[in-house]
Image (cartoon, rainbow, N blue to C red; front, side, top):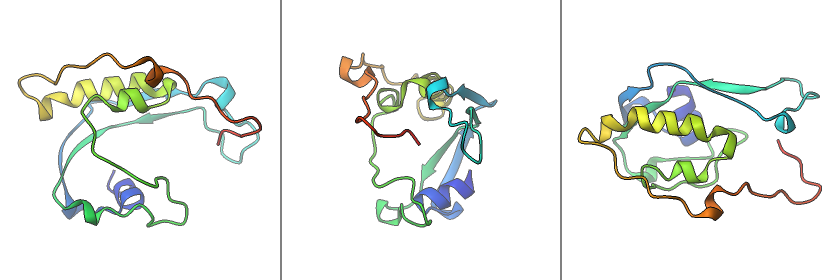
Length: 134
């Protein structure tokens, strides 16, 4: 987790305080059409442990271009359940499980109410013709 934090957003252990994690691995499988059988490393899905961290630094410390191939070009703070509306459909269940399990760390009295997403948030984005999924 700390390696990913440093490599992807430029934060070090002294910038965060771990609050907790999911108790077990959360898994998803890639839909068949997203599996690239001709790549050097075959990926059919992922298993992840999710962590809840408190950020103990200012937003000016975040640095998204620490590596040769940055994974992000921007970031922002969002409402607790918002990632469910933004993530690609096949990862949604993992996000739901993680957010539900980690919610008591931030909201001991109960998590905020989840509002029904608008239909455009749940629609799968369409790729441009000729574009490849990487």
